[in-house]
Image (cartoon, rainbow, N blue to C red; front, side, top):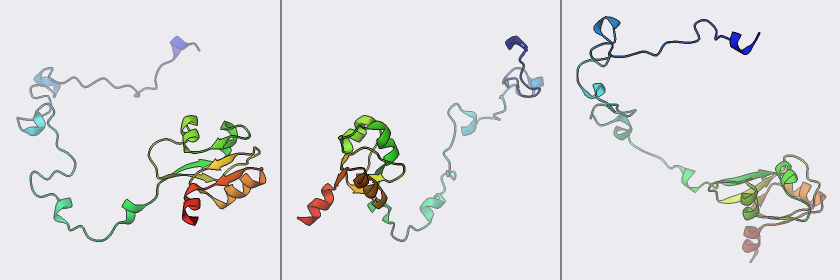
Length: 155
């Protein structure tokens, strides 16, 4: 078998539906769009949930109750195994160094170190949160953890 012998499976390829190519084709004249109206126009589509101008159900129903979602803390999460690969012994790890290394991206309230993987290098951490297992592994490897927010709370 050679490259020129390869063919797609039977039925895998379909012809493009050509619209407006004569009445006998079944897709001639109005090209399957019917007569006039919004859906016959170019760009004529309506958004999901549109009810023809009637007050939509998401506005008819009352919004009740409290949602705590606006107050949740969003963490930029990094595991020890990725730090082991990226940084060398003696490095200080902060949000800036993690961003430069490409380990965290986007918007978040703080950086949290989690304990997946093993750590063999002594690293200094200046982050917002560290899990208990991560702290244990960091200190076992000879590293240290400095939590700025915890230090501010002590003052």
